[in-house]
Image (cartoon, rainbow, N blue to C red; front, side, top):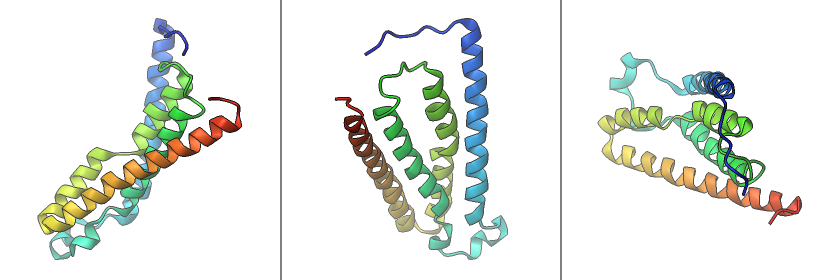
Length: 150
């Protein structure tokens, strides 16, 4: 490993502002995509539980877990936790892109319509996150071996 890098006050401000911008970009993309499967609130009472499944958010969260796992086990593995690329990509952009708090809110809405449906979608969210993270790690390991890293 490498020595831990302590950030100067200037570098800390640049890192914080960059993370803010990267997180905002990820959040805006997620907001745009998840708006594709949102139902108007006045129709919630007349919906079936399957109409409340947040498909886009499930896909975004699973993909984000896979990309973060790939980045942290692959190209950014040997980078310091304070490395600007690592912080901007994983903490900022992917942190903003994925949203487990929004998922929990959506699952709460689903739970009120169908407890079984809420449990099923919760399980799918959990397993897909693990599966995509595991896939990201496997791809990163192959990528690292192809580049001569152990």
